[in-house]
Length: 411
Image 1 (cartoon, rainbow, N blue to C red):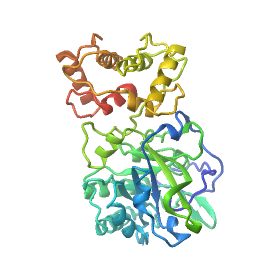
Image 2: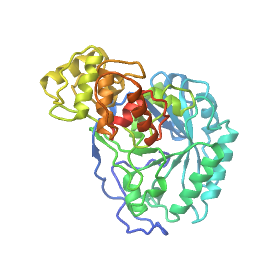
Image 3: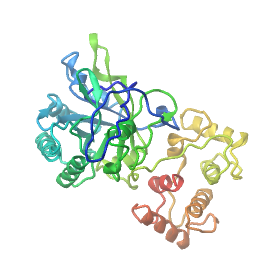
Image 4: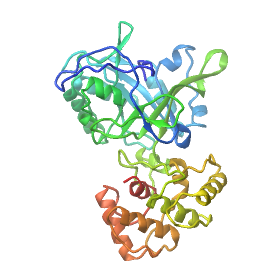
């Protein structure tokens, strides 16, 4: 993000109390959660600040950025006074493209009671630039909470207080009538907030974890897993100005969900609701035995790749998954990750029949809403789907779309 913290570092254990969050130097990386690599997520975006302009002094070509990205986050403010000098211009330009966008604020406390002042500064600045939080294409506003630089070292903000974060978030939520997104790291919460991430519970999380391996960001203690993942701070992005008219680098991110779900989050409408914070597609691999494997097999059959539904991810299923992935122009690795799930599931509703309905019924039973898997989407199935949706805080319309499927398989 804006302070350019080194991804190879993390904060030392400080034994910090919730009431007083003190500083310390950075040392080693935290363990991460093994799962799908960034390339398996199809909805990508960037985040920017004045740093992306400083080397050349040139504007970003947002129309070009939009050709390869779906969303962007732009730094607006820091602390209670600083305004990013490129924000207003960038926000105006990006708003004329297809990119979904939102401003972010870097939380930089100078006192133990400036949460409200920082929130008000952020609200005034982004409103002046035309952001309302409810216009088509606008994503929720973002609070960036991470280490700060002091005398050449990354340290915990000495004046950081969990209560002030809560004040900021509630004030911004009240101003824009939308739940903000929180950018942070699990290591920061562990070491600067004594592992108490409850202040971020219920907010969509945007977490950082750099590197190209198949390891996702560690879940935030007390808050949960990620919705957005910042996987690098140095990917070349066409449209971002670089030296000698080359593509410059920017932070790159992926979204944990489908494009339709992100569009719903950005006030662009969708037949499905965006995923709840923490809802995600599981990774199903060869050798596994589970109801998720049965679901994959039944959905493959529904998609024209007839597969025996025995719940065993054996060689036959691997071959069918690879064939499906190849047909969908995905990486044909035989592993069912987020990008494969999003192409595999199909919306079913009252009156639908077939193996996709049977897959849905198996998942309902696995989630405690027992029903006979007869492949017929009748009134009984509709009732069970509505009950599940209500329990998961989804729109209880009785239609099993992408968000309902994601909630079912991520139990």
